Length: 224
Image (cartoon, rainbow, N blue to C red; front, side, top):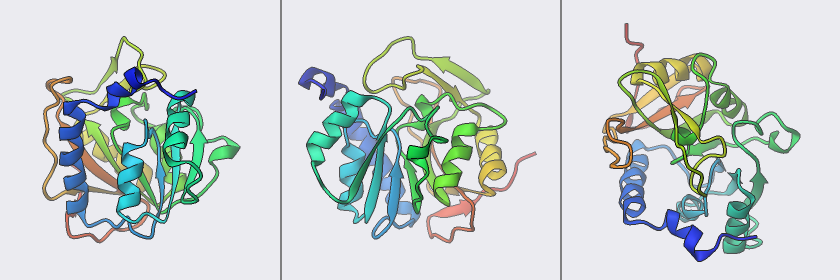
């Protein structure tokens, strides 16, 4: 069953429109290619990022969401487009299942990680993503001290667990190096204070199993 028009309004706010313009601009400034690549897009919502990736020339996208009604809406939106493979599953639980044993060139984890209850230290969600593709580009909410937040409400734009981590920049970047091997920051970092999450500015980061050469990123050096 697809989302109703009222439910879809959670993805159709002025805040989302402003945020998408900002973070798409930051991604394009990185110099990491999308055209001709196979992408894994977790937490796709109703497919706004999917549409943008296709516009950038993505060869194929494995589109994921944990809510069946979201996936039904995406499938109705894109139909039988052969560039898409639909993968229903809760990101906190599905990455080790048979349905997710595919490979991609890039994980595009956009507007999702700050909804996920990854675990400090081992970062199992990040570790699962690192098996699927050699590189991830993602957005997270940075916090002055490591914390876990509880949303306390359930709607189609939040994660199923309603819990999510809020790492410091050091914790997040050190975790990337531990899991992926290489970690990078944008030369021009996103620095947007979300009015819905004050005190936790949005940041973009890149993790990779292999060295990445791109004009808009700089390798992270572990802080003391």
